[in-house]
Image (tube, rainbow, N blue to C red; front, side, top):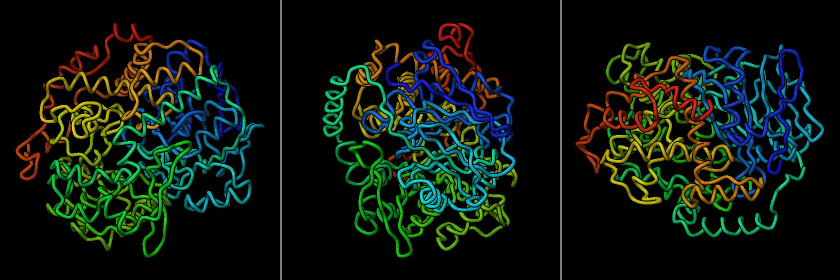
Length: 589
C-alpha cells in the first residue's frame, strides 16, 4: 500500500521474541496511522485494568502514511496507559526520529514485557537488534545519544529516557534528536519500567507514493500556504512559540503563581522578544520543516534548545520567577534528565502555594530562582523534597490535604492559558481524553489568535461544536502524522488531498473527519472502562468560582456545566460522558 511500509513489529522484552503484526486494509482506512493506529493496536492488546508500570502494558511507537514524505512529517506518536493519569495517552514528538523509523521500513513498533537487564533497540533496514544498555543506564539523554552515535553511526536518530524515566517518575518524557520531547503523560516512565533505555533508528528506504508528480505540486502548495499564514509564516519563524508570552499576558490569562493571577508583571523579561535580544543563537527545524520554530540558545553556563512558550511559563510566571537564565537552565535540565517541563514547573508551583497557605513543610517561596534547577534534579532522582514533587501536583496536593491547589484535569497539569480567559479552551481542557491538555483541541487559535476566524472568547455559544470539531481534526492530523502548527495554515480539505495523493485512496473530507471522531470516541470508551466519568471532565474549583481580579480577563469564571451538557449531546454520549451503544456501533468501535 502506498504511503505505508506495511510492517509493524511487536517486541517482547521479557522473551526477546519478535513478531510481525498484520494490519488489514479496513483497519488502516479507519485509523490511518500515528495516533489512530497506535490507539487501535493498544486497545486490542491492553485492557483498561492494565497497570501502566507493569510488563503487560504496551508501549507503541507509530508513524503515519505522510511520515518521511511531506513538510513537518518527521514526527512519531507514542501510545500507552499513563502512569500519571491512568488515562490512555498519546504523546507526539518532532525531530527526525519518526522519519528514520519509517525509512528503516517500519510503520510502528509495539513493545511489551520487561527486560531483565537494561537494553536498547537498534532499528535498521535489516531489522531490530536488542542490545545491552548497561553502560548507558544512568546517563542523561544527551550523553546517551552521544554514546550511541559514537558506537553505531552519527546518522542515527535516538529516542531515549534519562534518569527520570529510569526512576519511574510518572511524568518522565522520551527525548529524541537531543531536545525534542514526547513529553506528556509519563511515557518515559513506561519505557523505564521495561528496562528499555533507548531506541535508535536509521534507514534510507524509499516510501511508496501513489502520485509523485501530484506530491511535488502539493509540497509547493503547502509552502505557499505556510508562508501566507501570519502564524506559520511570521511569528513562529521570528520568535518561535515564545511569541505568545506577551500576547497571552495582554489578554489577562497568563497564569501566575499557580493560576492565582492572570497577569505577570514581568512577562516582558521572559518573552520571545527578550530571548531574541539576549540568549538566542539561531533557529532549528525538524524534518522537512520550513517554519523552523525551534530556538538555539545559550546561557552563561551552557547551551541547548528552548525554552518553548509552555516552559517559559512553567518555570517563570507560574513560579513568580522573572530570571530568564534560570528558566532556560531549568529547561535544559529537564531535557537532559527527561522530564515534562509543564508538569515539573506546575507541580513546583502547587508546592509553593501549599507552603504559602501553611500546608507544606518545606520552604518554597514565590520568585526564588536559586532553588529551581536543584528541584528539577531532585524530582528526577526522587531525592529529598523531590520524592514528593515527583508525585505530580494532584497526588502532592492530596497528600497535604489541599487538593484544590492542583491545577489539573484527570491528573494532567493544565498548561499556560488560564481557562477563565477563553471559554472554548476551558471546555477543551475538561474534555481532553489525556487530561489537562491544550493540544487535543487548541481553541487559543480562534479565541485569541483569530485563526481561522475570531470567536468571542467570553461566550459559550457554539463552543461545544467547535471544540468537538477541533478535537476530531486534531486526532486525524495526529494520525497522518503531522505537526499541529500546520493546522494554522491548512484546512481539513487540504489534509485530505495530501493523504489521497500519497496513498492513492479516495478519502472524502467527511470520511477523514470521521476518522478523527472514531479515534476520539475509542479513547473515550477506553477511559470510561477505566472508570472515568463526568466527574473527571471537571476543572479545578478555582476556575469555576474565583474571578480573576485584574487584567483583560478580570471578573470572569468558566461556565463549564452548560457547555458540557451540550458537548455530550453532540458527541452522542450519556449524561456521564460515556459513549452510547448507538455511536459505538456507528463508528465501528
